[in-house]
Length: 244
Ligand code: PEP
Image 1 (tube, rainbow, N blue to C red):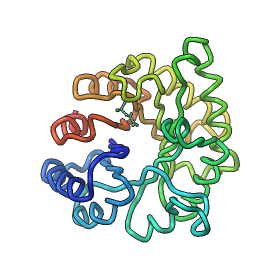
Image 2 (tube, rainbow, N blue to C red; image 1 turned 180 degrees about the vertical axis):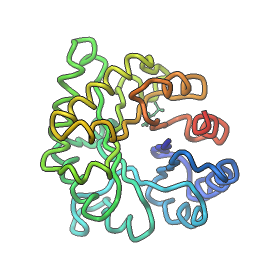
Image 3 (cartoon, protein in one colour; image 1 turned 45 degrees about the vertical axis):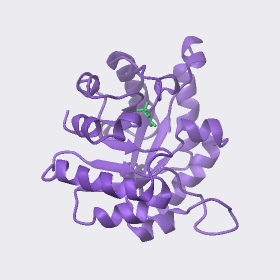
């Protein structure tokens, strides 16, 4: 269960917030909990959570470990500070920062090379869904993002299915709609790798997950977790989601 904070919360707000989450989540062992603050807050958050069962992720990471890339942070730098996960290919990066599947693929390779885990986001827009192109779009994204990724790397990768039309809109995919795409993603993994890998890979749903719908979504056989935006910014809603 992962929270993507996007560009919300100052350093102080982030640290105060995770201290409250830590109190709520003490003793939870049967699920993984991840928070992904803005990069600036990560050192403070990692420090506040050093004895916690909550893990920390970043919202992006570069394909190189260092270089003349103004405004970026590399996986080796994140690793050094103590994070475990990196979100890649979020639809907001695709939409506003011209992120492409090819770049996501390069970033994914570098994340894995640095021993970090990736949450790779895929998802269709409303026009693509209404045009009957959902599966084609997901297939193209997966093909690009997973180019050259070996079977042995899959244990370090989580896929997040995030229909763009459901992100931050309050309009979630129905549990059945989401599950259908998760099944499609699993079949794609089975065709490229094998059945065992397809069964084992974690596929999160993301898009307006809330305390009110998390139980039905998580009740679907192929939904293994949630990537949560807006509802991850408040202690009550995120803890209700994590402990659904
Ligand atoms: C997200 O940012 O990944 C997300 C799913 O946002 P929200 O939960 O607000 O739709």
